Image (cartoon, rainbow, N blue to C red):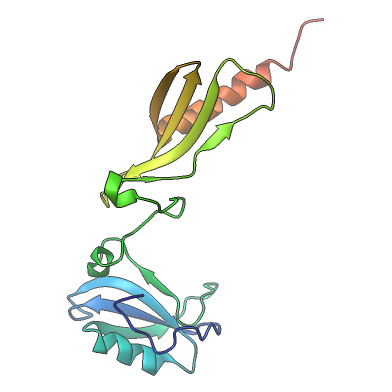
Length: 174
């Protein structure tokens, strides 16, 4: 993390301590990140956080949470997010802020047979932190391309409807 120069970078041992990183005080500031440290490194990590101008509050790691010493999770709504662009986990991270939109890799709907249309699907989301992701479906027929944008809710319903329709083709009259 560029603005938190951790002394423990690269330790990689299993973390036992979660350090909450606040801009301002821990009782009235903004929770900006969670940093993780092994039993040997909570003090150097907290010192590095304090030296970077943040407040550190240590707590035991939650049971079942597996992190490594030096791992940092930056919250998209915190003060640190402005210094480090946030991307959804599915984003391809190429040119998002120039075009104002996160995009996943486009997936072809390929049957390995000649088809009348070439279909591709992908996820997209504007770079505004409160934006909801959406599904893009693009159909290309000879020289014409059509793009349909679906909300996640519409995509879920479409998945169900397509499943029902394709299942109906299995049962034929004899």
